[in-house]
Image (cartoon, rainbow, N blue to C red):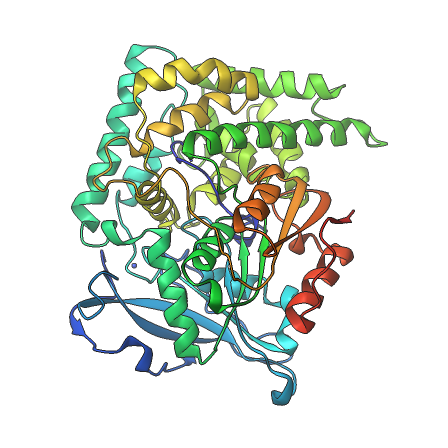
Length: 514
C-alpha cells in the first residue's frame, strides 16, 4: 500500500488471501422507524463479491455446519436514525453445542480497517471451533466495506498504476507526482462515494454493532476484535460500557497515538520484525540463501530496493516489480512468521531478476485478485482512517519528519512517512486526534499484546489497558512473532482467551505466554 495513513491491517485478512456499484446496498428510498425490530433472514451464503475479494462461496465446516448470510439494515446517518438506510452484510455459523449452554453470538472484527469479515471468518472458522461450542460465530462487512455500501475510488487499471507509483520520492518532480496521484485517488473517492464517506467513522461502526447485538437477541455484546478491531471494540466500550459482556482485544491498536505517531510506531514495528526475520534466517542450520549475517540480509534488501527504484524487474504478467511493490511484498510477509519462507524465496528470486513472488505478496497486501480485479480494502481503509483521524499533513511537514522516520526504519521509514499525506485532500474532516476508549463501568476486557507484533506494536496493549480505565482492561502478553496472538495457535494464549469467553474466567493481569 503506497499511501495508508495507518496500515492497521489484520494478519488474518492478509493470510486469508495467500496459499460490488457505488453505494450498492444503500437504500435511499428505504426508511424504517425502529431498526431494532427487524428480523434477519438467514440464507445460504453467495460467492463473495469483487469488493469482498471474490472467490467461491464458503464451504461448510468439517462437521457439516453451513455458513449462513443475512442483511442488517442500519441508518446511514446515526444522527438521523429514521432516515435513509444502508445494508450491512452478515455471516454466521451456529453454535455446535447444547442449546442450554449457548451464551449468544460472538461478533468478530478482523481489522483493516477495510477487511471483509464475511470472507475472513469462514477462512478461519476451524480455528474458533472451541468458541463455537457455546457461541454462534458472527462477523460482518463494516459500513464502507465489501457488500456494506462499499467505498469505491479508482477502477482496476487505475489501481494497478496507483500501486506501482513511487511512494518514496527523491526529488521535487517525484514528490509532485506522488501528491498529484494522491489527489486523484481522493477525488475519485469523493466522486464515486460521496454519500457514504461522511458516515464510515469508527463511531458509526460501533453503533452498528450495538444494533447488531440487539437484533441478534443478546443483552450484552460478546466480541472478539483483532488489530483495528480492538479500536472498534474500544470505541464501542466507551459508547456503551454497560452493554459489554465478554470481550477480547488481540493485536492492540494504541488508542493514545495520533496518525503520525501510529505511522512512526509501525515503521519501528516492521523494522523489528525484519530484524527478527534476518536473525532467524541466518540462525538456521542450513545456509541462509539471502545473506551471511543478519546485517548482510538487511543490507542486501536495502540495496535491492534502491536498485528497483532505478530499474524495476519482471514481476507478474506485464507488471514490473517496482521499489514500491517490493516494499509492499516485504511488509505483507512480516505479518506472520508463517510467511517468512515466502519472503526468503521472494528475495532470493528477486536477486536473480525474478520479482514474481514479491509481486504476488504485494498483490495480497493490496487486495488484488488473480483476475486483475481488486477488493475495496484500500479504498475502505483510507476512507475510514481519514474520517477518523483529524490530522492533515503537508509535504513540508513530511520532509521535516523524514530523518526521524528513517532513523526508526531505513527500510520502511520513507514510505511510512509519505503515507501521512493520504488524507491531506480528503473530502471529509477527520473526527479526532485519537479515539476515546475510556469505559468506566464496563465488564473486564482481555487485552492481548504480542511482543513481536509489527503492525500493532506491543506497547499499545498496555496503553489500551490504561485508557480503558481501572478494573476494565486485563493485560496478557504473548512473547511471539507476527501480528496477533490467538491465531498463532499458542496453547497458553488460546487457553486464556477460551477460558474467559466460554467460562468467564478472567486470567490474572500480567499473565505472560511464550
